[in-house]
Amino acid sequence: MSDAPTACLLIIGDEILSGRTQDSNLHYIGQRLAAMGITLKEARIVPDVAAAIAEALNAVRARYTYVFTTGGIGPTHDDITTASVASAFGRNVIRHPEAVRRLVAYYGRQVNEARLKMAEVPDGPGVELIDNRVTAAPGYRIENVFIMAGVPSIARAMFEAAAPSLTRGDPVYSNSVDATVREGDIAAELSAIQDRYPQASIGSYPFMRDGALGTSIVARSTDKAAISAALNEVADMMRAKGAAPMMGELA
Image (tube, rainbow, N blue to C red):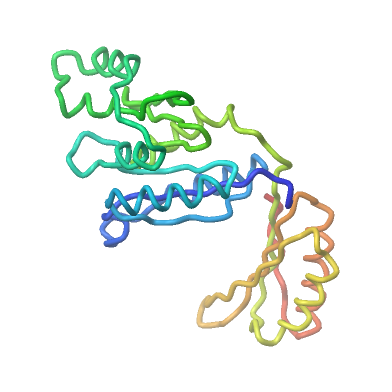
């Protein structure tokens, strides 16, 4: 898993930070990347502040194989992602001729300066449009950074359009076992199981169901056999504590 390509998601928008809008792109992109063998190592929520976007982007694009951004490439005054990305790369903003063509073809007489703003990209080499099958306004890639819309249906369409260009690793699988046993009662045994299965990442997550406190143990790995063996040991340990574990399905 350590040799897998890595990724970061930058979620851009004051509306996310304010709680007015609930982000769902992280859930989708995280699952898709895992299936492609790309480890999502970090996610950040960044306000609509040009300096903050540029600073965050420069910090993560050197650290990870890929960076994905969502939000801030629409037609309004507060859509400043492209200008911020250009600043991070030390470039100017231009209107991409092919993006303009697509927008004119899509909007016809309704095209205006605000909508043509969605054709803006940083200048220079390494910039490629990302198709958008939902609306005509494209995203774009600049080096290892993928700039996508924030609207979930459009972000997903852009991600899928970009997916074939990504270098993949071994798919990461996961499964879980749940029981009404407290985390503190199984912590020592769980640590020992993790030591025996270093090829798997084992996480512990408490839950409350029908008034009962319990723990869900999730194992993730590129090795299906390691997941099965580790969770079987967890289940045996839970039974020894007097619980009745329920195993999930490998995904």
